[in-house]
Image (cartoon, rainbow, N blue to C red; front, side, top):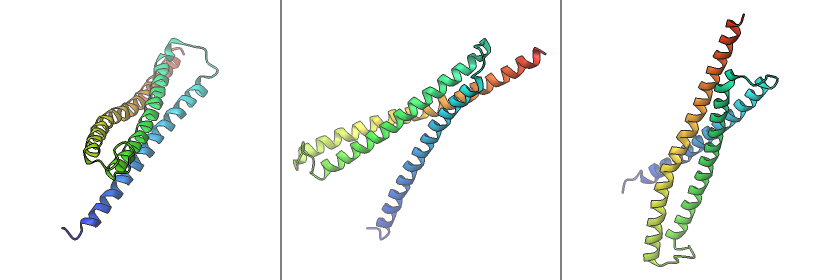
Length: 157
């Protein structure tokens, strides 16, 4: 056995923890920016009457709302995957009330949970990516709306 094996394993675990923490911080940041963007849009248009030129803004708000929903769904999924991993550890240790110490049941339950985790991981990755994309789509639509409003003010003078 490599004399540095324990040190490498500990460093790997620390990097995994750091990655997960940073991933969650980023997700919270995107959610907070989306909420702030919706609030800013409401403040910016509070005293305006509804106009056709605000259609891009409507879609920007819908994109940000979608980003919030998907971001929260992603975080909820992460919490679920952590719970599943805790259950899997309990099964592997023989502490689960359904499998007990039965090696056949432990192997079967572990295989099912691993398969479930892989499937959930792929779904969570897709949800997280779409949360990011819808945030950026909202930003782009907001900029389009703003440029359109500037153009309309300039052309009306």
